[in-house]
Amino acid sequence: MNIMNIKIKDKVIEYPIIQGGMGVGISLGRLSGAVAREGAMGTISMVNVGYREEDFYRNTLAANRRGFKKELKLARSLSQGRGLIGVNIMVALNQYEELVKQAVEEKVDYIISGAGLPLNLPELVGDADVLIAPIVSSLRALQLIIRVWSKKYDRLPDFVVLEGRGAGGHLGFKRGELEGGKSLEELTMEVGEYLNDTGIPLFVAGSVFDGYDLRKYRELGATGIQIGTRFIGTYECDADERFKEFIIGSRKEDLTIIDSPAGLPGRALMNDFLKSIERERKPSSRCINCLRTCNPKTTQFCISDALINAVRGNIEEGLIFAGSNVDRIEKKVSVKSIIEGIIEEYEEI
Ligand SMILES: Cc1cc2nc3c(=O)[nH]c(=O)nc-3n(C[C@H](O)[C@H](O)[C@H](O)COP(=O)(O)O)c2cc1C
Image (cartoon, rainbow, N blue to C red; front, side, top):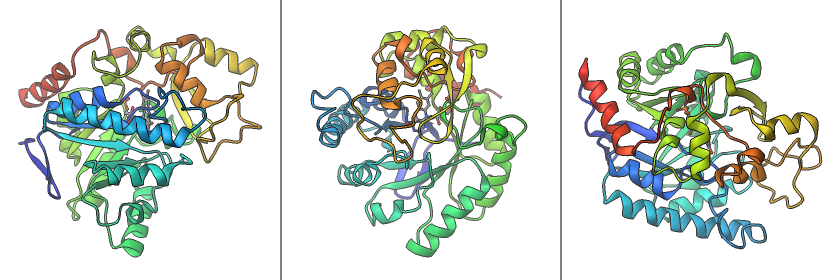
């Protein structure tokens, strides 16, 4: 099966591998640019992308807009014109509409949107030359999105990301569905069959790791894969080195499921921070009003504070999201070696 040069509308991807968007600040310009440079799809997460700007807490939207411009410029220069560079924008963000519009103005190659149903995404993007893709965790959610997009906007997704229960970060499943629910293999077959007639490419995510996985999921009906956690263990990942080391040193037993202020369960690594919120609430004194779903009066903890601590390497006070294959990351490597390895494994059999 040839996986080179897959066409999505007028854009061509050399390899059907998406580096999943990871907020806050885990996938910015350096990681996404390095992934694109290898002929794959590098994704900048737009969640609090301007967290390093000096006026971030006073002037959050302007800081995020400025931060994003810098990261996109960096990604583009690192990519040397290869691959695609896009963004991940969570529907649950209060700034969702502004961020989508900025991504369109800046002419990103694609927008991936999950953590909620991106029902008005086609309206925000209009006829701009930007690929749009929802992240779903069930056939039902995809059918609903397709029904609304076709009826209201006469538009279909340009590709779809299907995220299974093994993923890191926020999960599109209820806690009860995390065990005993459908496997990613079953979901891939179901969604792959549904999309078959449409020609819409399907990318699957959640504990997907290597070229053998790429082959398996392609045989089940997917076009490609999206990988998150594995890309954290790279020289190019934008997080502090202490964050990467913590990921590399973690075992399966260290993983836990939390109730996130985003209103979804999330997979993260147990640490002092998570132990402490079992004892006391940790709201922020400087709420930046980031999530539609969060009520600062009742929230268990401020997810912006916790994720910003994490990306800065303050592991003790940070929330460290990770996927269920975290134990397979053994040492820091380059993005190039991951992508080349996946392609070699894929072609091996
Ligand atoms: C640290 C971390 C942060 C993440 N942040 C986001 C995010 O902001 N938006 C999103 O849609 N997915 C996010 N994800 C999910 C990834 O994009 C990806 O789909 C998922 O991690 C795939 O599973 P894997 O980690 O097992 O490869 C995050 C995952 C991790 C590990």
